[in-house]
Image (tube, rainbow, N blue to C red; front, top):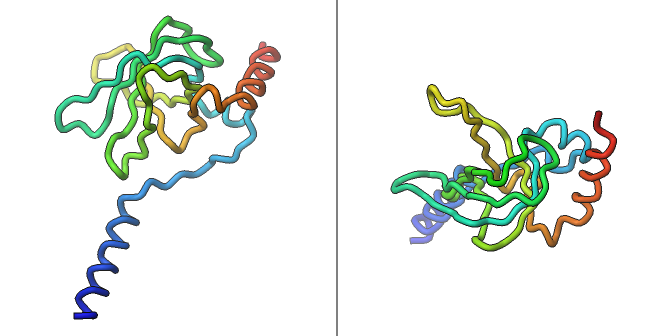
Length: 143
């Protein structure tokens, strides 16, 4: 009986490890993060949707300030929803500082697509004071 229990516990550990999110490069200086990130903005979530059987959600933002990338009134960002998908838990009505990365768009599309995850520096805006200050300094010195 103990052997079955031990085997089950071991299998559960390896299953959880295989499905866990693994993040790298989280402690880079802001200037380096800025250079590696395609789209950085602050904004409020106005809608979050997910298609049936999809492993990601599409989050629509009303933009406040764009630090890097195209300055529009709205942005659509994809984020994972499964346990191993590393998705960021955006909530409708909340404001965030978002660090998003471009990925290959749908065939024949000219609209860039962006995604973010818990591995990025994305966070609630009320917790982003130091990052906002660093981004504003970078933005003010950019050519």
